[in-house]
Length: 164
Image (cartoon, rainbow, N blue to C red; front, side, top):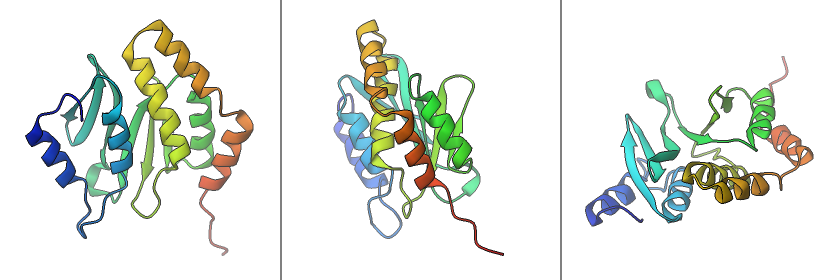
């Protein structure tokens, strides 16, 4: 994990396990974020933060108020419409802020789909990295998932309501 001391790396690996000793659902996202070039991991309140240069591109950690599960926040541009579609389909799991930040909530039993987090992580990183070429690459990468695909993903995330 670039930018981290050996002690910080050991702490990170130890804190990414559930009470039963299993890897928690944030671990794959954190590992992918830490593997990106020039990334520095830090902390912001109760969340872990991942930065490139001075700009954060991912906040991830436990949900606030002792609620079960986790939340991840990504800075998006090209994928913001996809995130809005997911938020309409499942407002308990996704939220879109007015400042380009998108929140995804998930649990160990129902982790965030890799197709979604991988795309959003790379886009968020590229936007935060700052160079125009990287921002253009992020937009191009994000457009690979069409509206139709976004709608399919949204349908999969909708919770089925029990019949009354």
